[in-house]
Amino acid sequence: MAQTRWNPFREMEEILDRYTRAMGGHSQLPATSGDREALSRPDWMPAVDILERKDRYVLKVELPEVKKEDVKVAVDNGVLTISGERHMEVDDEDQGSQHRRVERLYGSFSRSFTLPEEADENGIDASYKDGMLTLSIPKIAKPEPRAIEVKVH
Image 1 (cartoon, helix red, strand yellow):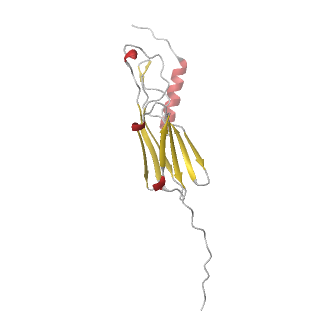
Image 2 (cartoon, helix red, strand yellow; image 1 turned 180 degrees about the vertical axis):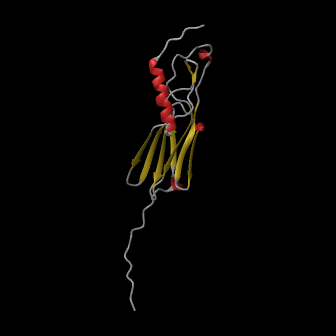
């Protein structure tokens, strides 16, 4: 029988992870196989910065090691959704190697944002460079409220 080293903190991490998933969050721990960590994690969420300018909104989405063709941007009924997948790359040099720790998250992701009324869904421009997706969403001028005089007879 092989001896394994007991990690008292691992049990606490698993309890906290189960609680987080039960509350609707995403797992922060990799799936386990006995006492060894698996090589990938099922879900992750990229970080997003949202900037409002006079004439547009700008979203910057961090997507390190995600290929442009693995990213999808869609708008449906005023909801902008960014989705895709990050794959764990294994090259020939890694064959036969054993990962001792995997902390980066892999797998599919999806982020959705409700667009403000003044956002122009049809004018969205997207660019992707160095693992950063930048979305520019122009604003439509809101009609100014005006007073209407009603004549009473």
